[in-house]
Image 1 (tube, rainbow, N blue to C red):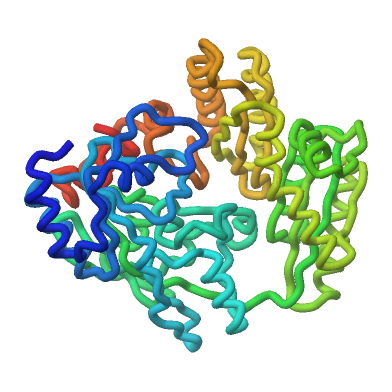
Image 2: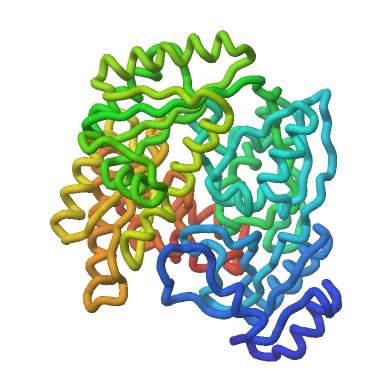
Length: 466
């Protein structure tokens, strides 16, 4: 709790206006949590919530907060999964969701400038109206903001073919801890003038600066999309098929994996019959500029999958069937939640060739702890979401979950992977950061943090907590 709250309140109201500063505990409480799958004990209710509308307001705030050493936590819609926007030392939550303007569409250069509070879905819809395409589609795209996507370097199902958010961030406007406003990158396709400051801030989880505007790269809208479902006897067969599909010369837009437990939950929750011998499922998306090309490429995927033991390969006949197929995948988390009081979902990434090994290790670890586990995710880019099904209210279960998750993270690292492919580190993965990064890499990261934020006021207590 901050001292001299009345003095700080007056200063903040002078910057943002009284109607844009929350200070009553009940009003601020809603900003003390996010979409993390478990309660985080270190969370605190912020002293203030400030709703920004301009970069100049953010700059004035940072100058004031830096002078008084007050923590500032940037926040969009709070859809993060690792506690990245949760205050751990009180302070000020800087809400950016009302900075939601489309600043400029440059169709000649295929770029779009937006403020950080624009919803990712609104960017998709806006681009589609102009025959353009912004590929990144994290599962939260309907309600997450582009600023949050950039801060976490969000991924999603299309990363197999199109990559993650960082590939499309060409330039940024960033407010530093001291209030300085800098502009990085721009509309240039090639640019090696100085350090790549743009990418430094992508994925930094609000610990190095506050993003107040982004210049995004767009591409032409694919004209046709096809989807298909392939079933296999085992996760190993499905993962092998993904690898062979990518070697075939055809790159699917998406290649989503669901293990046996995921398939069973999907079948039960959606009244969708799945044969008992099915041990894994792949859902493919494939796009192109002609139906003939799409069908030809889909045929190659089908032939490849059948060589790897595919039990059934079903092509969606039309848009309605395609939408239904992806509804099964999109409702998977809800389906799993119906099977147990709690679902502790994680986010690991490994080289694609290590997918069968890490899946087997995860299942063995969960079995040893007595947990039911579901493994699903983006097999095309090696990003999995193992989910422990449990009851966190039972004595000893939270401790067992913590230890089990630690072993899962260690398994990922042992297989050449890391702790996160798209959710970030935030608070929840802090205890495990040392197993994934070398001491020298951590020390170098902390030097950068110290240089940009010497008073450690930008989202303190996140990622490294040193």
